[in-house]
Length: 493
Image (cartoon, rainbow, N blue to C red; front, side):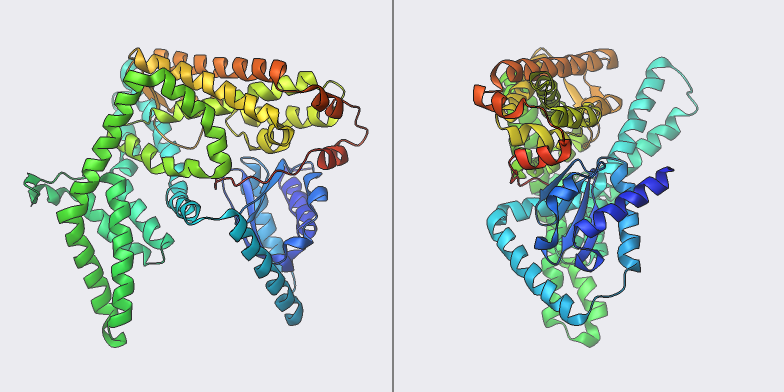
């Protein structure tokens, strides 16, 4: 079977198990998950869906999320969209009934899992997550360019690579402003126009708060604030400006008012905040790196489960904008290493449970590349204790990276998104590339070992072993019914 046929078959298998095309209101995907908006959640056949070979797990949030893994999800999603588009429309009364039931279920789910703070963090993630592919691509090009410069190779090509790597970062504030206005309900291009003021070279001729502004001052935080302000100004104009004048007056006032506030207020304030973030990160890693790394590496998996790690996205982006890399990401990536080590220990502790062992074998390659969701939702979280011991592994790996920061060898990433082995091409730091790679590799090894040891010796109670170390003649069914259903609140990935 060709790859296209396989993806088409996966889509065809998923569709009836989520209630059919008429039950789907929206289709989207992120790096690893197919995200479906559903009219009626009760029509989903969860157990049969989890039993599909291509499905690594399911997660409920504001959408129904099916974990398919990187690469696969980007190919299956268009097939789902095609099937939904080709399906005949449902009878109107059925659609109304489904919509009513779906609205009630969705409201109940939101009331249970959503808070104003988490909804705000989701909005922040929706602003920055679309930028990750460009950050990754430009970051890898920057790393390649640095390597060529250090080796003295291709001197005629390196300036072109530098332009490719730096062009996006020079204008990242514009993209943040565009996405921010779009996310908060304004005109996206007006948000981008206001944010563009921040990176315009001409601001160097302007004095504010007794100092001359610098192009880029305030960075992504300034762009975020400027675009949100533009949205509110635009909405105010829409209420008061006559319709006949709206097309002329509203965009003019939006850019004028928001632009003046940005130039004579936000750029200075956001610049001070950005500088403080960079200074604090440097101080923390230089003076308390081992302890900070231990805490951050150990808490990152629970933060992901609660969706709170989204608050770190603007911080990562600010550090990349300021210093060329974020020193926090390699530390946080150790959580994935702890997860991998824990999964390998579970594999050895349950020699008779063929179902769980098959799940681990299929999910480990993705885990090594930094995609931990299949292992989290399919193995450690449902089992309970192994999730905690995986966090222990992440803590020791993070502490290892943090310790070297205290010793003056800072390891950073030029982009956000990847972790595990996938982060190697994006590594950068204040020492040579060889030392940076060695420290990061050492952190991964420590995370693997600590997660393995903690799980092997303390990850299972006697009762847990008796319950799960059993023969499984029907692997998919046994896993689906034996493991308790998790109720995480993960962030968008």
